[in-house]
Image (cartoon, rainbow, N blue to C red; front, top):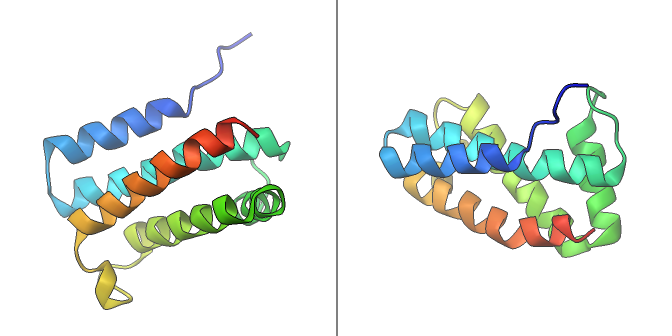
Length: 119
């Protein structure tokens, strides 16, 4: 049987990318990997099968049901990930600084992760 991937490796990669460079591409990628660190752990703890359509939204909904504040923070992290992946120009002025976006994402992960892991 194949060994299971540890999503915490995504967080290590995200931090490494952000530490190595303040280049926008690296910071956008770091935000995305940070989001998937938390999402994958939350999804598995919520019992949502991999590959399911709308797994992100369903996971956030289940997390909100268990802990509203944590679910809302996971939703904020999703918005940062969507900004990183889909918008070539910022959709809102506050998303224009990728150093700040990375700092927000990293702070959200640090706050959310222990809560998700204890669910």
